[in-house]
Length: 356
Image (cartoon, rainbow, N blue to C red; front, side, top):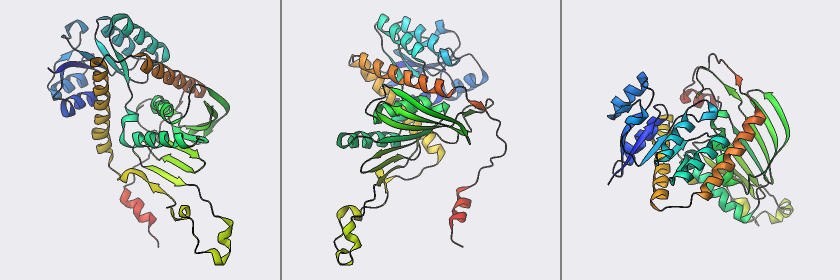
């Protein structure tokens, strides 16, 4: 029997509806969209062929709810709505970011009512981020990370901390040594995350008229090891491995030139996983939709298998606490009103790269 779900929120909530209808339709049924009744909500419900509910009491019996609405401490009703479902003994998966206070409230409501709650950690499920995490975890078994450099902005700061939690030995402590503001569009923090020295380049700017756009990047990370650097060039890839260069002194003797050690025959840079660049529509509508679907399947299995929630709750609370610390350290984003910035076709960039 298909599990019945309702999606709350018609902006990013559309990725959830797509995930259910395109990838999970054999096991799940979206019985409706819950929203305020805006034009977008009505058109969304009509487009996807599902009912629109504007009153909570009219939502039919469901197995779980997807709350894709901002949580309370970032100005939305997501926490209130999640707790309302939980108090009605309905499982909830909720979109991040979620403040530690809100997360504590929702987990307590879940435990009190014997139901499941989980945040959707979309970004670690994206193909190239997942590859970066896998390789880092294997490297960490062989050698200790010496340093991590990361760049991201407020809009994706919560998943950045989520990624840290997978690739660093510990994120329990955050020590700030220095913050330099307004280095171009970035504020720069140096310090330690756990025992790992860290630099964060924080694109601390927001366009109030278009908050989801105008960031200079999503995620860029580089972990330094004794043997080389592991780099996540962008949220959408590629993942790069750059071996550390070492030239033994004996090679400066002409008679030794034929005695090349194996490590000098390594490429100066490796692109991992057979990476092939894809356009933005592919990563948005394919990778993001699949990432959401993977989270839903994972959540459904947790419910079916009666998995102990405590370890998940502890990790999510830790990530939320570190996210809250980082965003408080950097403070309110600077408001920008960008002008110009006309897009340059890649074909033009290729022309610039040609030798004259």
